Length: 249
Ligand code: NDP
Image (cartoon, rainbow, N blue to C red; front, side):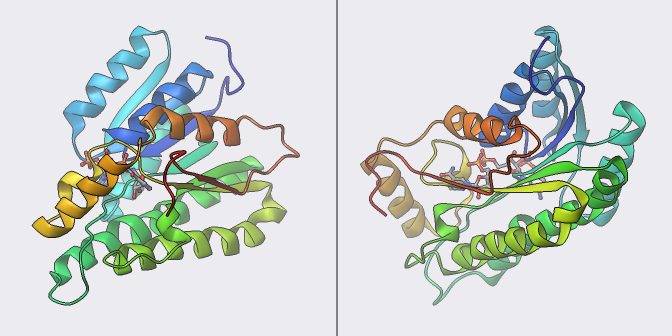
């Protein structure tokens, strides 16, 4: 399979559905060897088969980004199977929104652990490998909610603002190591994301919002990610804010 990412190894967290799944297919189509990480291993295996049936290369690895040992194993298994890592897509996430008052604090903990700390820890585990290889690319999936505070999204806002801030500070730290950093900030994308929301009213509000726009498709975000990671070495795409055409917020 010929493509702009021939010979490159891309690790994608949250590859079992939505944006991660579509990104795996898009980067495999550019010739990258794909490591598919998430908790639902049967979904990863089905996706790996789809990629290898299309003559790509893919390795499914069960990995919960809140578990330090599983992050370590993800990196070790990737290295022993594919011999290195060139691209990390930090995509795993949940969006457990609702008003601050009366919120289930365990939802906050989960969002922080997965969307922010999980992203930071996976980055921490992969950075030394990118540096030793003389460069690489990390793509962090933030959100429009990483740019704009929205009532009932306060903690998700805090987490995604955190992802944006972490990414930009990291960009300045690792520029000397030829490691490029990209933040992707999607608006509404039609995926399973809202299905995890525990507050029924918040779930209804989110569903109503998604129904009020013509949401992006997961492939639209995958195309933006593929664009960012296929630029020539002297081009660093640092930020892509991408909304449905009729999403005002
Ligand atoms: P999905 O729910 O389809 O995908 C989320 C992915 O994250 C799944 O593959 C899930 O896999 C994985 N995941 C969840 N928890 C963990 C964990 N502890 N360890 C590893 N993987 C985990 O939603 P999206 O594709 O929409 O979401 C992807 C990213 O995009 C998220 O960061 C989200 O915040 C962001 N985003 C989404 C938008 C949207 O409108 N959909 C808008 C803006 C940003 P599994 O359950 O198998 O572990």
